[in-house]
Image 1 (cartoon, rainbow, N blue to C red):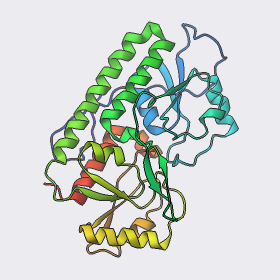
Image 2 (cartoon, rainbow, N blue to C red):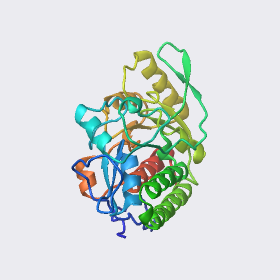
Image 3 (cartoon, helix red, strand yellow):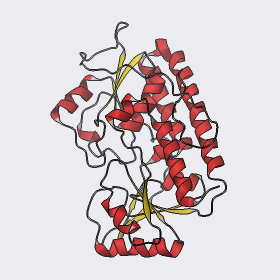
Image 4 (cartoon, rainbow, N blue to C red):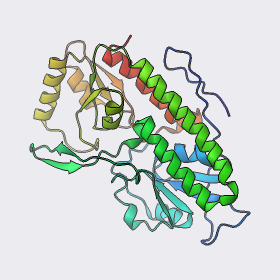
Length: 309
């Protein structure tokens, strides 16, 4: 178990990253998992890949369907992706409507990691002012809810590979402890801030904000894609001014120009990254930066925007 080398917050915290899973690069004939085969796991996108890798350790092969550096909201699988999913033992998804393509992909087994989490609908406003009921799918940004996702992955792996069930349980318990440490870190770091409201690029941090007593506003809705009308930008600018907000958050996988436009119209305005951790770059993956490190980066940038001690 290696220790994180990323020191992104000004406190002495060491959070073990865990062992990375071997990446699977080929197909295997359908059928019962034989002793000489590892379980083949395809995760829909990055956070599910990272969670699955920590639970699987070296005894299951895990890959991500959405490639590094690609924003997953409007991503669609290719024919090759469909073939890869159908040859795998399981497809691990976020659920809550995030993977709109999942019903047509033909996976042998779908592990919906939010199936047991009770989620409330809320009204998302469209450009014409009308709203519709949606569930915010960004479950993984709340470390407490992320533990439920890790448990769903553990249960699926144990069922598929009972000979290694204890191994998966140990890994899941270890990573759950890391998530508990992350939760405690966030509570500590955000415990004394001047502000409690922030403006994110898209509506990804609702569960996070609710967990830690904050209020999120967003330029986009639950997806960062689509056109933003000038009147919406003006609303965001006026909101930032009224709340005394000087930091507008952009993301790491999208164009930051909209956030820069807003920041340019408010006193002392500047742009920082608040990552929804929907994907990481190839360089970040090579450097061993994972979900927990990205969350710590978020906390450090949130502290600046919220004026935390």
